[in-house]
Image (cartoon, rainbow, N blue to C red):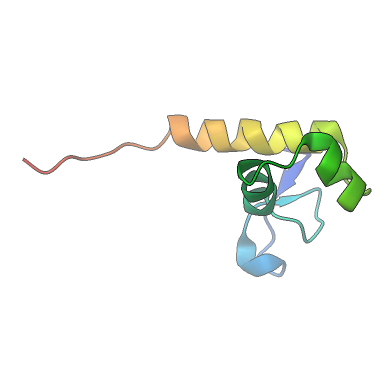
Amino acid sequence: MTERITIDVNKRFGQPCIRGLRITVSDVLQWLAEGQTIQDIIEDFPELNEVDIKACLAFAASRQRHTRVVLAQ
């Protein structure tokens, strides 16, 4: 995943991007949430592939696992 998801402060304000492109993990997650399929996204952005999109999902899952919620008492 580390070779697929990159963070560069000079691209998209340091948001995690795919392979140094200007397409963010957040962009891909939003498209999937809106109902686009992996194939739809690849058709719209041929520079992406299925492994890139799955890397976005893995990256988001990893971030979620490492997020802790503190509940007010």
